[in-house]
Image 1 (cartoon, rainbow, N blue to C red):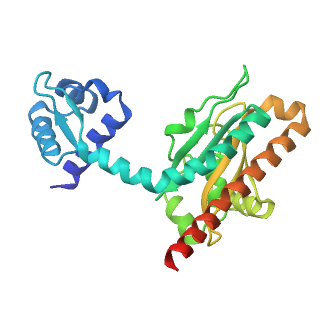
Image 2: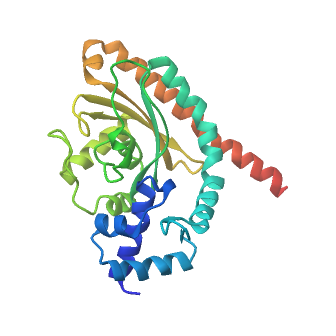
Image 3: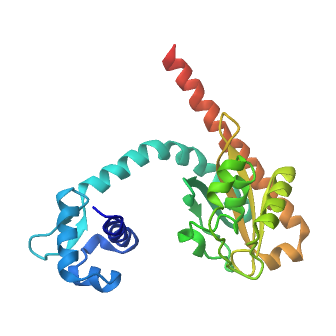
Length: 264
């Protein structure tokens, strides 16, 4: 299989994951959306179905996500759910204290992913347009909070491609971003001052594992006017997020103790 055909296969699976595929997707929809030729797409889909990643309904002829992908999901859930379940009450503490949007994030390789989130309870709120922006690590408090504590090698791998400019305040210069990350490491927390979304200010703290490496981050986003009009409000957010980050970090001590007991 060529690199090009592998890319087309992955694009197809991405389309299923990003779309409402619960009612099935037709061959025509796939071809129209991805620009594939019908005959080539038909053969590719047949192969994907043979491997169990998709299946075709016999009556409607539409394609659905298959059992193999669901198994992948189960494996990921086993690894991630216990951490997310442990963290969720602390996300709620921030949400209850501030009423603002809260975001738990981590890295999958070089991509920033969302693990859990809570929406703002205020009438005036920020939206979560960043949820599908896995390349916004340099423009978000979530991404920068982890990047600042990563090794130089890990940083270089993540930052090797051109940095996308989301607003006029986004840092896209590597040297400037490096200075920003040093500042974050010194202060212990990160901020996103309209760097990803206009009018939005965000505070982020890293969550460390047992080896003192950044495993995840937790952040709180607020309309910027609330920050500028009340300096105490920023302190309230920072204190709340910092407390939760430290408490979530205890998850790793807890799991290590359980592992020690099993080993004994």
